[in-house]
Length: 478
Image (tube, rainbow, N blue to C red; front, top):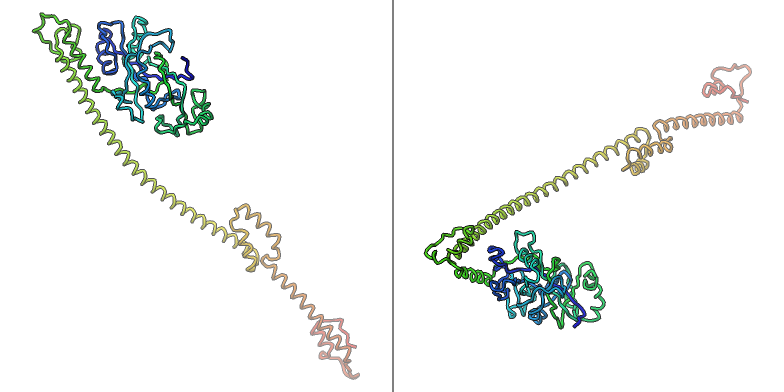
């Protein structure tokens, strides 16, 4: 059957490592895959490698811009069972099969039931388990086991990418950086979807309709899992999620440890009890002599020591963090006070500078006005005009202004007014003498002086009086 659309979800593969590979790694892998591994007798079926992985995060978009909600997850998760595991989605290179499917908590991987997830709006996992056929590709099987070893350069190098076929979808629009669909708005109208579909990543778009709003394709309708592909280029959001031991994982560890008691123990050593004080004491030979309770006690003791060490380191870290925070708060408070003091000081300095500039400007203004007063005779109106013009002028501008005013104020220079007044007084004096003479001359014509023939002109004659008074030689009496 052909589907209109397909999408892939990826995650890190977690194999159940055999003791033949590494007994310590085998113990750790039990805690990782927990209750999701298939119930397979690996001692009998040595050609099978059980694996488990979180296939997808539900209600949270993947890197391809697609998402599955709770309803679709519940209706389709069981359809993974019996689907093939291939290499890089090449259906001609099948190397295993999916045998189990369930749900787990996002972040902790704790097992969840269908009833527990049916009302969830936030993210959770679809978790699958299956087997890899070692005989189909031994090298790949070894690589998968190495990918679970944190000390290996191949750690987490193999991922599981599952393919999904579907015909219908809605669009989720989220404003901001969130990837959870509960933070977005559902678009189900066909015409609206058609108008923005080219912006979806699945159709070559950027995944955004503007700078802040992202759009994602939400798978709906008849959804069919098409199989699992093992890949070295995962696109999943589940890669790198930290896992913790769940109760189910611990129970499986204890169950497998108890099987140690059923090992082929040398009957001649039944009465010999080997003292196990360290994990280093566990060897192939010592396992023939120890009891399950000894190993259980050792693991319990190791866990206790690790727990106490963790608690101590955590307390030390928290104390250091608190001390650092206290120091930061003290420094921040001191910085606030210092900033206020600096601000107040700047304000005070600025006020002092402004006052100083005002004093300097006033002194310069007075100096310039005094220069005009000393050079010119100024009346009140002239002083007011000059004061208005020179206020705020720099030195060059004032020098130019002063030179210009020297042309227009020649008549107001000191002493010029007195000279003009003296000249005017002289003119007025001469005019007065002339008037007097003219008047006297006019009077002389009208009244002729009769001088007796026997009289002799004396210094008291009218002629001599006028002559002495006005020093006018040309005066003639008729």
